[in-house]
Length: 561
Image (cartoon, rainbow, N blue to C red):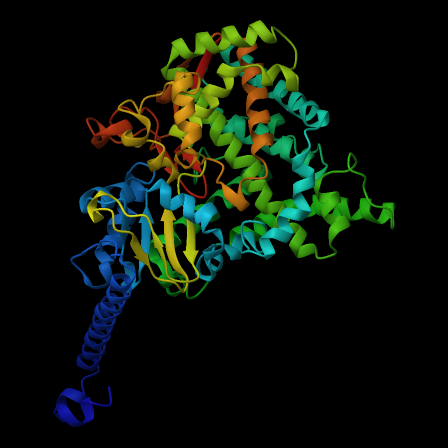
């Protein structure tokens, strides 16, 4: 603004409005020149390495602000990760620079690039300071909120608890699955639908409460369920009343806020200048968790200097033995609670949805279940021998991965694989906390990787030996549990829990019917989806994503015994 003192008339300088306009124009000009210079510099660096820059989105507004608004519109009205898919298709590439807010920010559906990010060049791809700032208000410095090597310490604390398959876990599953089945039976007897997303959220939360916190007092499955046709839509599923409802509303609202922040990139703090929008929700979640933490502190005092043995105590007890940092313990539990509740509930929800849409799969799966375990709880060995059950779960994970997109950031400049648009040349990615989003949901539906039937639900692809060989030979086209050093610690726990619940359900019910007419207003896909390409055009529910994939407003089938 100093220049205006010398080059502008005094009456112009006296106008606050005009000075403000000039300031804004100057800022836009500065950032535009900066972007062009940075791109020129990166282009020269790429050329020296025999690489090229990924295509960059060209919006109509400075800083691609119109692309930001378009992304937010699609998030509200579209299919999960649809905006990224559209942007990649429009630019004819598999890796793209979104260029939002004048920043380099990349998105990829190239599974070879994902392999580099998660495994072969793992040390150069971190969570990143900007991303951690985006999530830390809610999830603190737990296992998802820290970078290597801190994350390695977190994994060392929790891995022993997840590494062993314990009979006690199955006892927990059995106790809470019985409660869930009673609800299913009761609704079936009066020919009334039930929101399975809500039920599975309660089931996985109650089981996680005992598994993580050592408490069997959550009993969310004992609370009243939403009534079909009378329920109201919540942040993700249906709105639930009471203390449990308050926790769910806060837990899910915070996840949605964190997801929206990604569209605003480094500008999100300005949008939340007056207050961190996750804070009010964090207070509710912490208050809900407090009694369980206090109980664990009491158990720790009673043990004195004695630590829990390998087959004793719960995760919170083992954490108490590992550290005296209560904030760290609370953060860790909240992080693992997200994985233990939301991801497995998502898998179970979309599995039932697929069985509703594919009765022939239901029949074949039930035949296998009744052959191995006609009644009563399954064992580890029972589940291990149910090949078709695993195939159904894998196919659901392929089409509806619980984490449909993920994020990493570069430490140093690097090269990643190119695609057909680069004619074999690798792509140059800058360093310095440059963001890279990768898309499991999109990768796992690519026709060039999975065949022309990639968007169809076909568990047989996990049975056919030739197709399984191709899968094993190219494993990074299927990454529902992440991969590499940060692969999900609870992968086996999730498979066991989901398998156990599906066995118990199929022992009772022979088929399922989807009744989305009973869902709350706003839960069904918009009319504009009809005739759209891919699964969007045929979907009967509304897949959306926050931290995890969910069905907007829930999934409401009924079943026949």
